[in-house]
Image (cartoon, rainbow, N blue to C red; front, side, top):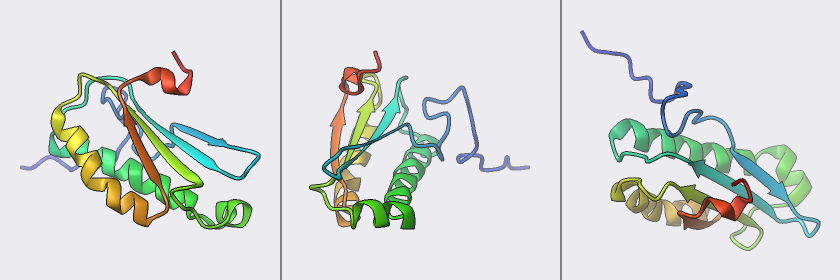
Length: 125
């Protein structure tokens, strides 16, 4: 008997508790958009965690490409759309490697990516 693949469900015990939720979204008067992805606990590089992280990235891109945001801010470009991923410094190296492999995908979808291990970047400390 195999267990269901629940990688996309809510899980308050996982370092990415809500894969479908945008953690931080900020706009500027100049028309730029900033997204923040926060992983506040060490993240393993197991398949479930990687899938949860990829789902978050995909949802951020879907949000920015929504009709509402396209009408308000125009097409996303790496100059006007930033994703700051604040990843717990105790996360496994495979997570940081995955984010680097995703960089071209994000850029093709109009996002500049910054990866940091400093959560203060969001002023949420």
